[in-house]
Structure formats: C-alpha cells, structure tokens
Image 1: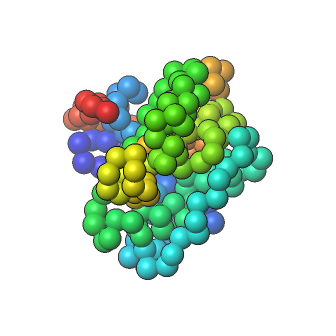
Image 2: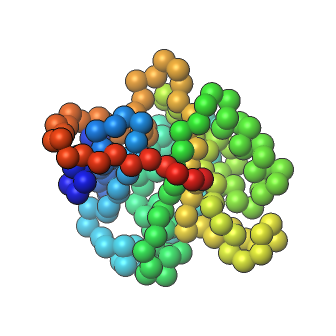
Image 3: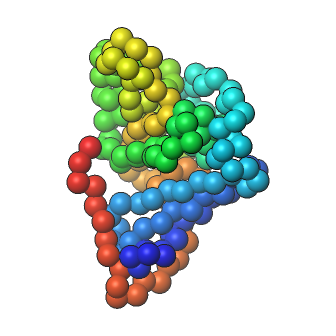
Length: 185
C-alpha cells in the first residue's frame, strides 16, 4: 500500500467487502473503503436506493449494527454524486456524551441534515450520522444525501475498533510508513 500503509481491518457482508487502511501511528487517520461484491458504483447509481428508513434508538441485529457497510449506502453515494469522485462519509471519534450533544445541536439548528431520527446504539458504541451539506441554501433547501458525517462515541470498556463489524488484523510495517492526521473539520 502506498506510503507504507497497511490493511489493518476487514469486514464482510453478503453484498460488500470492507478494508481499513492505516499508517503505523495508532492516532493517525484511518481510511475505511467499502466495495460491492458484484456491482460497480455506476451500476449501483443507476438503481434507485431505498429511501432512508428512520432508525430506532437501539438496534437489535448485526445487520442493523453494520448498516454502514450496506450496499444501500453505496447506492446512496453513487446516486447523488452524478458519476463524480468524492467522499461518502467523513467519520469522527468523539468523547463520551458528545453524540447526544451533537444530535441536540443538529435537531435545533439543522434538522434537515439528520440522517436518522436518533443516534444508533450498537454493541460498543453510539453512532450519529448526518448529511454534510444542503443541496442549495443552508437551512432552507433539502439535505444533499451524497456525503455523510459520522460521529462515533465508543464505550469506555469496549474492545471496539473503528466501526461495528470490523475485525482488526495484524499488520507489519516497514520503516518507510508515513502517518497522516486530520488537520480540519
């Protein structure tokens, strides 16, 4: 992998495969890349995704916990990016209690950007997803569903790593690995 980075996590669903790519610095950025097993993004974008179903506060199945790997999420991105490159999700780890505070702020100031009715509580974490942009005028137009912001609050005692459903894998780095860090957002 370029920059000396390695695959450090994997996840599989019936329709998708996911890898996590990181540098040797545990505090550096992590790239989560999900691809459909059989279809291209162009094919996924040509079919209309199901409308987003509002989530209940606590999920009950592994499929619901791992909805971030669903092919419908790839379709959402592909449909709304008009065959352009882009980022489907920008994810952030937040401190305990921050997901509820962020949800309250979005509810009060930007309710159209909420992806779900409430944060999802999954084994090991609480997750809030919001749309990153409006289609046109801020607060008056509808949300642009192409890019999400994902806020992940990890339980203190959790063995959780990156996202629910990701299995961490061992990686051996050479001395050339170049770490990268978030510099804004």
